[in-house]
Every structure is written in C-alpha cells, then in structure tokens.
Length: 334
Ligand code: NAD
Image (tube, rainbow, N blue to C red; front, side):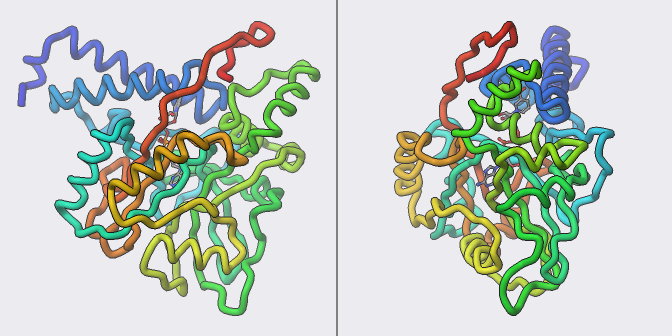
C-alpha cells in the first residue's frame, strides 16, 4: 500500500471530512432520532469513504465509520452491556454486487440454504429472557453497550413478558426490530403537528423516538410492534439453523416474520428480492431491502464476522423512494 504521508493531502482531508460528517449524521439519527439527510445520502457518503479506504488502506483506522457499528448511547438511559455483540450488515445494491458477495461466501462454505427475509426499517433491540421471564431490553447502541429500555419495551403488546410452553430455555438473548406500523405513521405526525411538536421524518425515526422515551407512558401510547431476527447468548435453546431458531422462537410466543423463506440457489434469492421489491408496500412495516443469511449455524460460525458485520449475511437494499419535502417549514422525508 501507499504510506500515509504519500496520500494526497486533498484525499486525506476528504476522508477526514467524510468521517466527521458521518459521525454527525449518526448522532442525529441514533441519538436525536432526527436525521437531516436521507438514508441514501448517508449510504452514499459511506460508500465514498469506503472507496477512498480501499484505494489507500492506510486511512482505514479502527475508529473509521466504515469499521464500527454506528450508534450512540444517550445519557437519558442507563447503559447495558449486551451478552453478545449486535452487529450491522454489509450492503449490496445490485445483482452483480450480490453475486460477488455470494461467490465469496461459497468459496469458504458450501451453502445449500439461504434464508431470505425482509429488512424491516426500524431499530434493533436486544431482549434477555431468564428462565422464561423478560429481564432486560436494550437498544443496539455501539453494538457492545446499549440503552436500557426495559420499561418501554414492556409496554409493547407483541413482546411477551413471559415465554410460553413447558420447556423454556434457561437463558435466551434474542434480537429484533422495533417498528412503527406504516398506516399509523401519518396519523402520529398529524397529532404531533397539531400539538405544536416536531413531526418524525419517517416511520423508522418514529419508532426510535417513541421507544426511546424517558417516560414509558408515552411509549405505551404509540402502536409499536416488534419482529425477531437474531439469536444471541443462549442456554437450553438447541437449534442448528436460523430458520429453526425462528420456529422455536414462535413456539415460545416470540413474534417472528411470516415472510421468510429458505432458498437453495442464488437465482431463487434474486427472484425473492425482485418479488418483494414489487410488494414492498404490502406489509405493515416499511422495508428497505431484503436480508440474505446463510441458514446453517455451523456455516455462520465458520464464516465469522468483521468488526462491523457478519460475513454470513448481507442487506440487499432497494433503491430509495424518499423525496424531501417541506412540511410546516421542517424538512422531512416522505
Ligand atoms: P443497516 O440498517 O443497514 O443494517 C443493520 C440493521 O438491520 C440491523 O442492526 C437490524 O437492526 C436491521 N434489520 C432489519 N431487518 C433485519 C433482518 N431481517 N435481519 C437482520 N437485521 C435486520 O445498518 P445500520 O448500521 O443499522 O445503520 C446504517 C443505516 O442507517 C444506513 O445505511 C442508513 O440507512 C441509516 N442511517 C441514516 C442516517 C441518516 O442521517 N439518514 C444516519 C445513520 C444511519
């Protein structure tokens, strides 16, 4: 590679500027629940920084936004350490990029089952059940430490306080997406505006803003829901694949999506992505893509993870539909 002091000063300055801007946008998005740029614009800035770092690996420091799980912890909440890390996902935007990703994976692992599911546009929350009882709920935060939102999560009808069935696991850490149903979103914003409050930019920010309330009674008044999409630390929960884990979670009374499918080939996965691209508004929550995962846990373990994302999963993102408009003088994405 090129030594850092041989990198053009202009490129170094641009990389520093991108890192600063991405940090600022992440703060607005994760802490204030009030972004000032679209997700597509954020993704574009991240892609530009990634490209610079690929050209000049000397600029790829461990604290670069390309290398860590974005997120932050507000002082309004008690910090909680997750039992296992919550990661982000790498993105692909085209079939060419997806096929390159799948080829890299299949070079290392013989995959005959791809689990395809909808990418729910909400916020990740980690739940811990001990002997069947919900004892803790926390936002993703920086992936290691999140914000304690246990009283807020207890107000969600979808989240059981106690698991169902005779043989509950001794320990179960599950992750999922908390979302704001699309149909109720317009109504919420109208109510906020009528009360003189600032409306939310989109259902994702409405979900985060409604959950991350100091007073859980405010959360209780919002129609939040949750769908599980991951497994963390566990004891007495014996499953060998992601799809089997979902089936077992459903038996325990945890909400899982009915839209996931296990598919055998890359071509079938691409058909799933195209089909849901045409039906993205036919579900109760917003989707910003499809998540493709290697189904077998044995292969997931073999593939491992980077500091930011698992190597066994990818987010296939749909092109943005957002257009920025002005509502009562406030920039919002609709
Ligand atoms: P991400 O949202 O692209 O992907 C990771 C997340 O997807 C997981 O943490 C999980 O919460 C979620 N997810 C939804 N459905 C899932 C499923 N079925 N299986 C697994 N995970 C699922 O990455 P990120 O690191 O959370 O956030 C980065 C993204 O956030 C950006 O690409 C951008 O869209 C948005 N963002 C926007 C701004 C802004 O200013 N507009 C700022 C920061 C981040």
